Image (tube, rainbow, N blue to C red; front, side):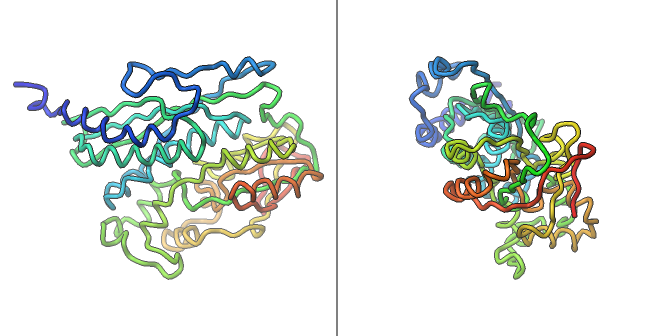
Length: 343
C-alpha cells in the first residue's frame, strides 16, 4: 500500500506545479521575494514607509456553486478570475490596493492539466488587479469529493493609508451614486440559477444559443466577474474622493448598499437608469422570481457602486471609462432611515 493507491498522486501534484509556474510568473511584482515552491509566500512591505498610517486590508472568498457550471462545461480557465475578483473587489471597495493573492483548490483527483487551467484563470485575475500570486495549495481529497469535482477559494491582502480608506462617514444628502456595469451574474446566486436552469445543466443544455442573450447559456452564466480595482484606482488618481463604495455581491442591492451608508442616510436608486443584462430578465421569467427577490439576490447589472460629491460626477465618469469600465449615474443619497429605495 502507498499514497497513490490510497488516492493521492504526489507525482501529479509535482506536475501541476510545473504546469502552473508560467502563469504564476506573469503576476509577479517587484515586492515579491523568492519564487514558487517555498513553505510561504514572501512579500516586501517597504512601501508602508511612504504612508502616514498604513493599514492592511484582507479578503477571502470563493466562487460558490458557479464552479459546478465550469465542471459541466469542462471549461476551467476563467473560474479563477471569479475567485480573485471576489477578494480584490472587497479590498478596493475599502480604498485599498491589492498586493498579493493565494489560492486553494480542493479536488477529488489531481488532473495536472485541469489544475493548470484553473490557475491560469487565477493568474489572469491577478494581472487584472495588479496583485501577485505568491502561493497556493492544491489538495487532493479522494473519498471526500467525486474525482471530477473541485472547489476553489482564495485570500488576498491589500494596503492603504488610513486617510484614504473609504468609510462612508462623509456622506451627505445630494451625493451622487455611480454604478459600474457588471458582466452578468458574477459569482453570486448560483444555487438559485442552477435551480432555475435545472433541466439545462448538461453540456448540451449550456451550449444552447439564446437569441435574447446573443450567446449560449453557458457563456452568459460563466462570464467572469468584473474586477474593478483599476477603475477605482483611476478615480482616485483623478483627484476624486470616493465617499462610500459597495461591492454588489450575494444579497444584491438590499443587503450590500446599506453597508456603504452611515446612519441617517438613504440610497435612492432608479432601476431604469442603466442597462440590465439580458440574463436577469430571462432568470426572472423562467424561474417566476419576484422583482424584489431578484434585487435581493443578484447584482442586476451593477457590480460596484460609488458615492461622490455632485461636483465630482463628470470627473468620476471619465476616470471609470478610462479604465475600461462602463459607469451609470443611478441615484443619489438622501436623508432618512439607513437603507435603500429602488424606484
